[in-house]
Length: 263
Image (cartoon, rainbow, N blue to C red):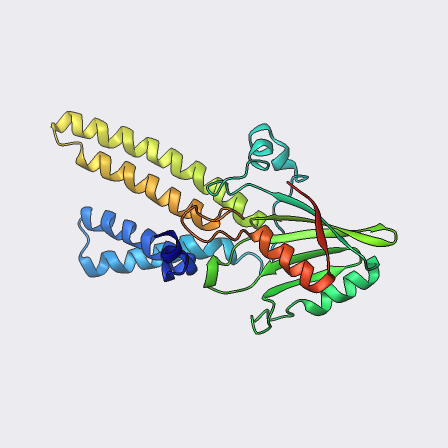
């Protein structure tokens, strides 16, 4: 069953799947509130697409989260940055690779291997980005395929006679912080909705079905969005290959680099 799921369109097109699920949830809520079926589907498609795509429109190649960013030094986020789990959108995987080549040559080879503007995935390696001196920012460009998942950044360290390549792989910082704000807003709205619906149901003596629907819809939407934007770590039933694994293979192909540390 797991193998079948890994090769299914559901696993390979996470963005479209999330769009469909979120749109369906929004449409059901709209129908419950009295919208026509056609109107509800239109609202669901528009709002679902907005929720799914907004984090990607800030920057074509956004900087990833980093353990050094000041928000990630806060107690809870500091812990999450080191907690490896598919439902954790704030996990930052830190890797060190070693190449036998010198830093300048590594930078040249990496720059030559990256997709340039407009970042169309037409090469054998679907990685876009830029290099500046000893630093680089990367993003795997695959459109809908595999969910357009996380970015990476790093630097070259001169370790004669070769080079250490320090890389951190994480969700785009802007998208992750937007998602954090969204979680806070959703949590507050859920609390307000639970309070309002519960009070109304108690006063009217109605069934708590509406309350349960609102709570379940909010939880489902949160989990789906988390599974989409989260994480270099895929959903347990999905593909076993992590983003870190893909970047390791990329650096092995381009720089002949091998892993010496990973956390």
